Image (tube, rainbow, N blue to C red):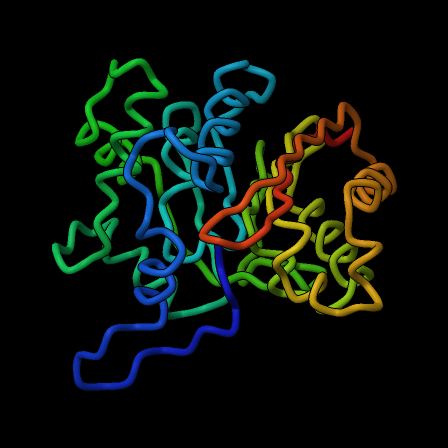
Length: 255
């Protein structure tokens, strides 16, 4: 999850906007699946997707990682070369601090514990943390609104994932469709795309003119126009942090 409008923190040791965002959106997870929340929805679907073996390869790109490691936990078991990216320098810095083992970071222990549970406790939370740190090879800038979203030229990836990001970088459903097409350019033929977000709580849905068109049908049409097959859309509605949400989790394969 990433909000490209976050600004670097002011000098003087104040909490960064990245840390504030983590505390707000990620701080209430207790590491269990006793209640409905976006963390369980995304982490469980990622675990099941990777465990199924439908996606193969070594190289995974996470577009709009933000300061979060949530989307990397299961991925790191199957993809030993992960590139993280975000449009915000402060988000990239916060993520890099955790990767470097800085003690002054957000506490991801509940997430590591839940990832361990999903994997049958065959790996400890510390094992998974070490695995993520070993798998992430780079944290680089990105901008999904550009035809070439990454700041540097790279070979196409086996997997591209993006979680709660593109809708924050766009203000219309047309821009969102263009962003998905831009993601496609980073994916090799036969590679897998994974995207997740919330149809209700995002800048597009906040625009009355576009809220009716940002839905599962739009996603399916966009992916079909980009040459994807085997499109699978999972939907769930819930009250998360006292807010009504319509979450989606989509997987597809590029022809």
